[in-house]
Length: 118
Image (tube, rainbow, N blue to C red; front, top):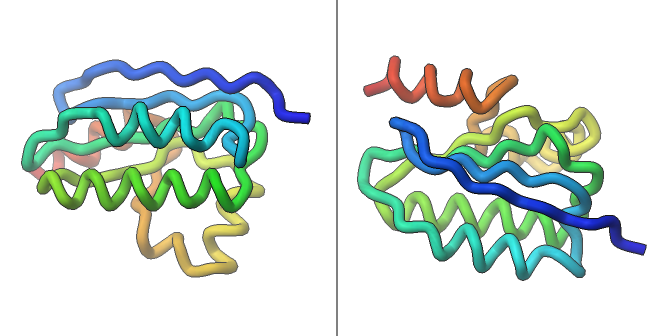
């Protein structure tokens, strides 16, 4: 049974931050995918996906993260993941996705890294 999923988007100087909480799985992936792909991103911005309150992420959820990355890159923006749960971090390392997504301990740290880069 799928737990409730919530997501909230806020805007920072670096770009949008999407906070995802609950289960990102087959039942909820479409909802998040639509929201993320609907974000208007500008070249040079950074999309941050804050996963600190994520309780579960299956292959459908990982597919959403990859789609978000593709959306950001197509717009000339960057992407970063914040507060990646340990279990998801292990999966990323097993399949080689740790090289695809820059990660930071918090969304604020991701924004600070973006500022240093710019």
